[in-house]
Length: 280
Image 1 (cartoon, rainbow, N blue to C red):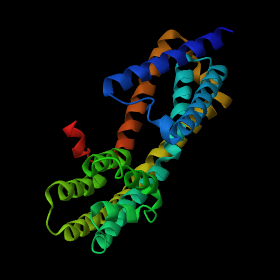
Image 2: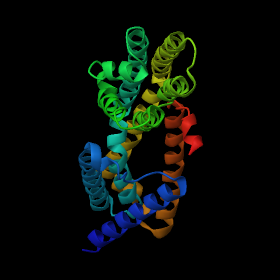
Image 3: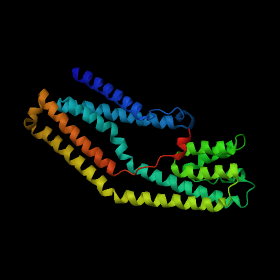
Image 4: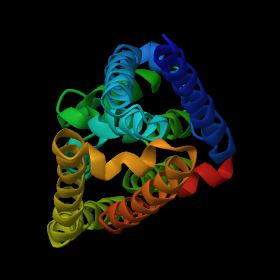
């Protein structure tokens, strides 16, 4: 019973720490806008999965070792496990989004020659927009019927939430407000830049595969070694049963976690900040 209470208190403390960290960093834990487009259900599914893995991992770690440090680490591994699994999917979604922005930009460029104004060109692409941004383009086309085009475009940029889309929106806003010259050539250059970004991301992702593989291999080897010691040579780990041993174990675990986080960051691709966010 005491173990269960400690596990619950540890989970509550961990969640509280995460919320404090999110508040300090300005990270949105639950976006109210998720209610409007169905993201809340997916968010809750991920939350339930992560909570189940964290609680299960924490209880298993406490039951197998009777060490609070191991229980907390196991809970943390369970919580972040889905994020490790989805890293490749996130990369592919990012590349698909950039490619979709480039394709839609080319569609507008090609439609402008035969369209009766920019609003008509956007409406003509609503049914042809690539899947990653199709819903956002349809809402943009619908807003042009009752909103000023620049305002509708800025809301579209907020929905897509990508720096490449911001450049396209900026060009369209300037064209709508100031009648920019040679808009077709500008849109073509922006589409080429977006495709270059997608190719660059793929090259960087492949180039950093060795770092990601090293992180996975080291993690698996260390966890397997510790589990083998717990299962077959528990006497070797007896010094960690004391309070001093737990303190030493905490220092060791924090050193490994810091090393893994540093290696994981080496494999990330930094996303540029949206420049239109500065205007708010």
